[in-house]
Image (tube, rainbow, N blue to C red; front, side, top):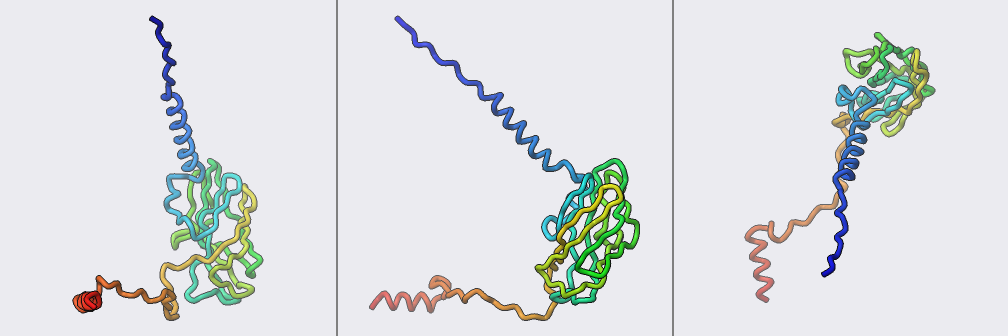
Length: 200
């Protein structure tokens, strides 16, 4: 009597382990880089982000306006965070834009090594764009160049931060058509009318 030789079973464990290892490397790579322990302090979508060397500018945006625009000649605070992944300190030496007369830095522009510097709250260093050359509306961005002492220059397009609530007195318009009330929500009268119609 002859026996049919069985094919050896494939061992899938190494393959599964290699896929798991690759996935873990991808996930760890997403968290590495811009001082991941403090990255949660920065909002994710409103502002512009960019890197130059070991320096990262995070969530850079103009503060929200009280009305629908920044008029020509007005000023606006530039809100941002700066991450320094290097062990060596750096500093924001100057900021410039072609959309305004000048940009002023008030406070300490230093960015120590391995830190996330606050340029976005009342406790942080203040960067102010002064003298817009023309009206700046929501939806527009202005070109801004950040010059660092060691890392060099980084240029970004900076938007106006969208406010959480509209501060103007403009009326709200409902652009959706009125939704008819379903028969089953019309109450007893609707049920009676439906019954009467079905009886004819």
